[in-house]
Length: 213
Image (cartoon, rainbow, N blue to C red; front, top):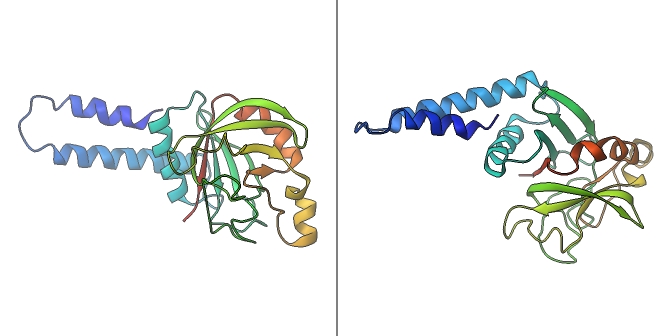
């Protein structure tokens, strides 16, 4: 499943060859791109998330090598009244969930346009996160810890108490009534029903990618 292993293996076959390795690297890059696009097609992700988001997520998947072959992509190029949180089982090539998600109250109104790693900013952070263990919170109930994996971009997630949690204001009924999803203090908050389903699926080793332009 790790695409960079293909690159490594193919480059090893050229070890000791003095010719320019650029053509080899080019063909390997093309092969990796083709494989990613095929996986995007096999998972039926067209119309759910843009290919660019999935491609970048898979690059991070190879870099961070999560314990689970599960990725969650939060697409903040969409408005909050759209379903923009997609969970994919890469082994089964299957979408597990496609639901709503809240962004931080200071990241924007209908659209998330501003991001931060700063304490008390009440903004969302971009980038890659390891989804950790399940915790019980007084305010949100069962939730999931997040470890930001990118220094200076989201590595204050634990200190900021950024978690995945359920929220009444992320429910479809709220969005239909008000025309937008409510906002969090920076957490990717999900509808409570979706949170209950996804807790065991995401916990302890899946990868979250928050995508934004």
